[in-house]
Image (cartoon, rainbow, N blue to C red; front, side, top):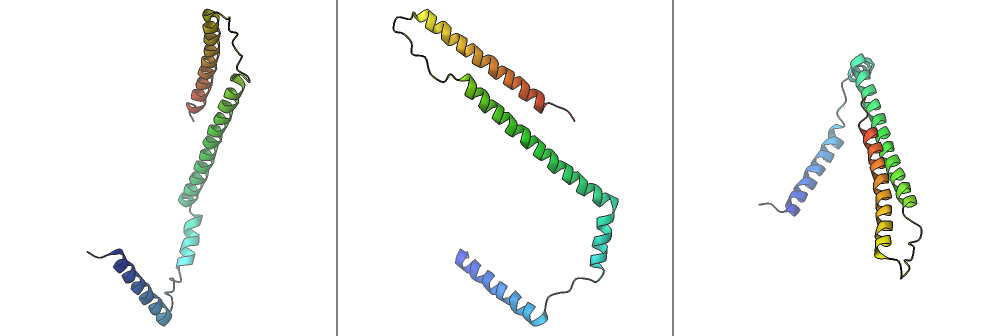
Amino acid sequence: MRTEHEKIKDLDAYTEQIIRQVEAEGLIKAPAHMKQEILERSERIDYQLAVTTRKVSRQMQLFFYSLKVGAAVVTALFLLFMVPKEIPQAEPMVPKEAARQQEETLNRRLNNGMQEMNRMLNEMLDWKW
């Protein structure tokens, strides 16, 4: 089994052989009619359609990427404004039931907001063309 070093050495030898051949014989010329064929083919309708389709596809990719970035920004802003700036310090004498009720209210608000965000994102992504 050949080692990597031997494979590289063979590639170097092959590269040097190609260099010597090109220096001795020169580069191979392209057929004279090739340029004209390429220009004619680029003017054909089927080729123009393929190029246009590719361009539209790139625009759609950019559009969907922009939607994803926008959704991420909206989610980040939503979380930024929904989380309280300061965590209120519970008074030592607050009954456990009141603290639990306050926590449930906060959880319910967060849950409702996230459900609304999820609904909006699903509507954007399920939009049919």
